[in-house]
Image (cartoon, rainbow over all chains, first blue to last red; front, side, top):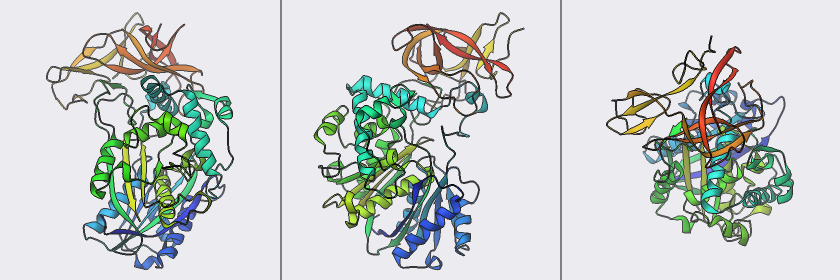
Length: 374
Length: 130
């Protein structure tokens, strides 16, 4: 994978943009990435578009607006990991020798409120068995039961990420919050309050990959799905047998990505990890091998996950600040990490960052872990 | 006349209005599952036999839904969680939860709960009550 380089990144801010289509946002992100790479769309040999709600041929619509069709265009859906799945396929097309220069982008324009997913049958919706925040809450409760973490720790994750988001001009929320405000915000599904949940929203992100170019290297990337049996899995099954011995998809993907990069968790300088809700981020730390279960409390206490700490996590502000446009969120992480590794992240720069890790997980359940090296 | 089940493949309604969850059991894997599938979803064994799942269990996890999700027109708030059914081997299922004192470790029993179905007409779903 070391032959795969990121030579250009682009982003349309994440937020709410009335009157603007997903296609328009995609065009903004793609043009920015192509400009950075110093190429025209006619130099791209294939394109991979991540989207969950964009509809048929979303990637074609974006490239059609740029007179960039004629090449293979793949539309990829993998829930919250859609952009990661698109990146994994694109990177593989280069490392396998199929292509020398490809474009990856994600676009999304989500409805407001609780995400509706065709994953569920109509009767499951009618029975009230589908709200994602409820499943997040049950997983959060299990985390608290097993580790001794408390709702105060969940609140501190939000405080951390929102403090990072202040310095991110592309984030939806750029105002600091206190733990007291987080805990006092509207209760959605105990123990998760409104501020502990990310907002589905809109946005786009794009990346140009080239063989052996100059730039940040995609040193490892893996997309994995869930193993059967865990009733708390992101695949939201209606039954499960046990979960103690079932390796989560994040860990499966991280193991692969670390091995490809010949690196381990201890080598990672900066992390962008899935924070659909505050507990999901704390679970991710352990599943990625960044700490042991329960060690999250000490990390939150010593400030090492803050920008300026030993290993900042979600310096972009995470989804809790940016919001989550499903197809674009994974590539938004990649844009952030590339800027961090280049040393161009401005006020939220992680000094000396050389190795970055990106993590997404969502419906399917799909998890994608990417290791980037400067 | 009893209200129809919200989906006849997961729930049976008796003449008296009682409900049963329709599960599967594989002699090869030795595992129970829900909803019933032609193949054991945990091992891939294809010798699934139909079983009625136990009507009693213990709450493992519980939360409350305070905002109506898309496609749902029943009352809010409502309880939801995971129940560990009686019997072995272990089987945990997602269910609506209700009753005084509901929470982790509390024994519960299966009951029917009437809600608007996907077509808006009344239908019975399952819940576990303390």
